[in-house]
Length: 409
Image (cartoon, rainbow, N blue to C red):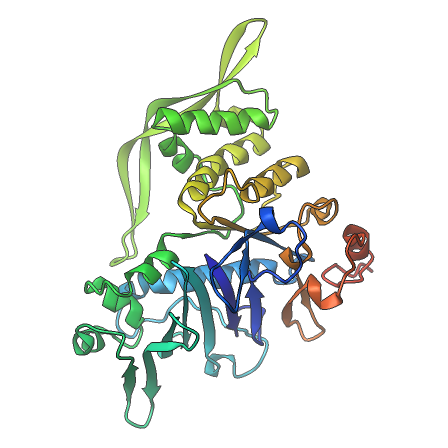
């Protein structure tokens, strides 16, 4: 589970921003919206969080920062020697290229805290570290810092970190993360952290419209097909059944070595939706359904899979083309102890203010982004305003009490 994420000098964020999934001492909705960690310092962790803010205030950049960190961990070894990464630092200053970007995430893995981060520029990793809290005090499993005078990296290790350290050091180029290299060279000690970032963190930076491919593959088993059909039917879409039809299609991918696109002939399972009228079933193609139904089906497979496996889903603009009641349904699934037994989390940006009232979210689950006069984004929690229990949060937000709204001329 994701416990905390902090970053600075990324896109519209110049200064450090901290996003936390640690639950406050408030006992409101504690049994459904939080779960115990087994830790003394952070006793409970949130199942979900929502980020509000005006357009272009920085909501999407919080999610992009987390996604960029994931991409660095999983693909930094694919960066060619002396090739620049796709890092986007804060650009509203003349010397922006000289400032490093810092990203750090803390995960809870088997009741142990892993605090991992790095500082980079477009051409070099400047530092990288991993702190592991098996007890109260952290163990610095490894630390890597670039020494410009020596033009090489200084490494330090904890006695708890074992293996072929010199081999991993030698194989790690300046553009590549040590974590990536070590796991690629069969370091099993770091693999749980790598898998938490690479596999258990699911980030949709372009909104909930992700294509129907995953949900179609998820439906290959009868049990999963029933789960998807139940979710779609519960949304009152008028769909009574879903089937898959295999058709000829194209598979598109980019060759990372050459940068050239490659297209291959393949077969694609296309969903067919059954609607009942006067006792007859009429099948419609995916493209013939409404935008809301398409997005709901596209999300159905990932959501059900994430709930089953206890992963973390991060979605930009979850409410895009979805009715507020459908958004609420998705949020409730992650807060349902029966459905969410393995610690799955949902983090999303939204403009849906109806979620703020009526006991749908805890006060510590609400975050805001806002830009100042220097075009710098800031991230802050609702708790900074000490809202009262039962306070009309929707009214307060729309009136500007908490910030995060557009100033209209």
